[in-house]
Length: 355
Image (cartoon, rainbow, N blue to C red; front, side, top):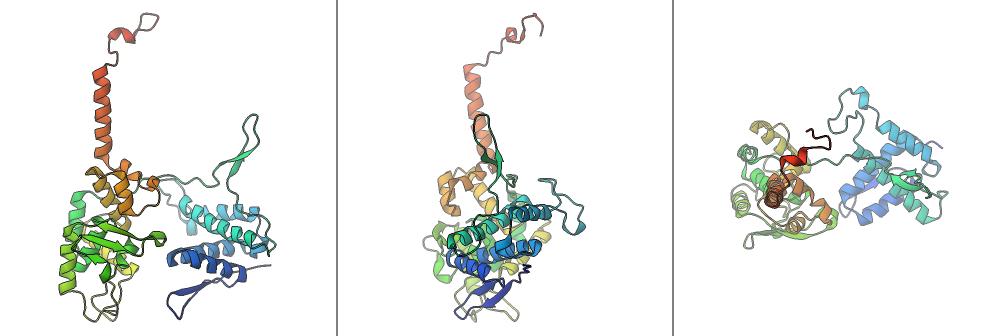
């Protein structure tokens, strides 16, 4: 049976969106994802499934392992005849991270169908990895199906940061950027701030809509609160339709909450005016934690500030903070030098008496 999905987004009466793909099994799975994940995750999952079934063209209960492997191959092919390759992995198709995320969405669907027990799906067609056999042992899943390169995030230096902030045109824009650059907030967390979340007396913000639905309270520099106060006193329209902190300042949407696309446009415009080649909202967040680590902030404190569930997600800032690594190496090398490393020239003579 040939199946071609169609992604439909319709407003819910009580707010939010109803996401549908036009197949009862897929729509039931999206209902489950909606109950346990954030709206952006639901949309991303629906899009991943749409792409998969558009390429495969089969009913969900007819999909095989061969279909999944063919999908991986199709995703790695150049997009629309592109000849440019990525520096990080030399590939022309979609990045390994994107393919892994799509496979995770597909695997999640089939785990759900197996648990239901009322479909013809008996096993998950998405392989967990490639089997390897060691001497004297049975084959085990030891090789990842898709190996994604582990790359460090990009950050901007203090000179670029100052130039970028100077290129922003309003106090609102500067306050949003400072929330990311000084407090490490995510883009969605900045846009989700409500007036009641701002605690200037404590120099802290309450993040009510963090990643994964997790909440946290984070300290932010007084510099941010000074900028925010100027925006609230002089720029924020009195006609704002709700209590979102950051709203549109002019035009037909004046007073409505600022969108993610709007914030991205603000950042892109300031980046061009500042002469910075590449800069995103998430780079501002990475820059914040890198500077905090370089200033000596404990890794566990950065984890709490960032809202990371695992300390492993925070460890990248050890690599980004060059001063920390250089200082640790200096201490270790000085200790080795103090002990002596056997620099007698006789240590360089081999058994033949030659160097």
